[in-house]
Length: 296
Ligand code: NAI
Image (cartoon, rainbow, N blue to C red):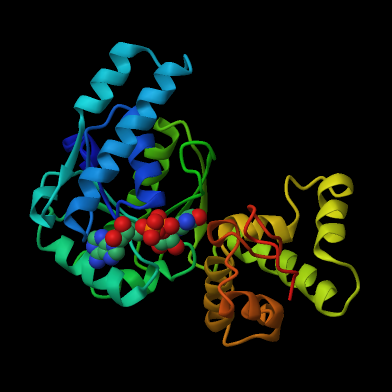
C-alpha cells in the first residue's frame, strides 16, 4: 500500500500564493487537506481564502453546493508541524531558500512516517540538495506547480539523485488523479520550463539593452506574430522581476556561472529600484494611476 493510499490527507506547508493554490487543487480532488505556515494566523487566513475560492466556483456554476460544502469540510489549518503526522503526502511551498527548506524537511521527518511522500514545489533549487540531510531521501520528489496552480495543468515531477522510482511514480499518478498534466524530469537546474525560459527572457532584455527595440514592440512581436500568450516583458511584470531574477541567478549559479545564463543588468536595475512589476505598480511597464514615471 502506498502512503497516499494509507492516508489520503495532504499537508501543504507554506500557505502563500502557491500553497493556497495547491491546497485548492488537492481539496477538489477529494483529499482532506491541512494547511500549515510558520506565521500562526496565516494558515487559518489561507484556509479561509481557499474556502472563499471554492465558494466562488459555486457562484460561477462550476461546482455544486454539496461538493463545495464537503470540500470545505475537509479543509483544516494546522498550527503545529506535529499536527501533520497523519499525512500521506506533504507538499512544501515555503520561501525559496535551500537552508530553510532543508531545516523544514528535517523537522518533518521527525513527525511523519518513513513512507510519507515528501514533495517540494521549488522553482529552481536542486531536489537532490534539498533531500541531502534526510534519513529517507528515497521518498523525496519535486512537484513543481505553475501559478495559478488551480488553472495551469502542467506539473513537473522531478526526481533527485536519491529519489526512488516508485516514489516518483506515486507522485506522477497522484497528479494524474488531480486532473493535472504531469511530466517526469530529472533534477537539472531550472528543470524544464524555467531552464528553457531563461534565454527567452535574457535575449529579449538584451535586445532592449542594445536599444534594438522597446519592450512594447518586443512583447507585441512575440505575442501577435510569435504565438506566445504573453511577451517576456509583460510576463516578467506578472511573475515579479525579483522572483524572475532570483530564478535566473539560481540557474546561473547552478551552471557554474555559465555566460549562457548571465542575469540582465536592466532587470537588476528594476529590482534595485523596487520596480517589481504589477505587484509594486511598476515594472517594465507602469500599472495604475500613480505609476507614471518613464522606464529606466
Ligand atoms: P509566498 O511568499 O506567497 O508564500 C510562502 C509562505 O511560506 C508564506 O506564507 C510564509 O509565511 C511561509 N513560510 C516561510 N518559511 C516557512 C517555514 N519555515 N515553515 C512554514 N512556512 C513558512 O511564496 P510562493 O510564491 O507561494 O512560493 C512558494 C514556493 O513555491 C517557493 O519555493 C517558490 O519558488 C515556489 N513557486 C512559486 C511560484 C510563483 O509563481 N509564485 C511558481 C512555482 C513555484
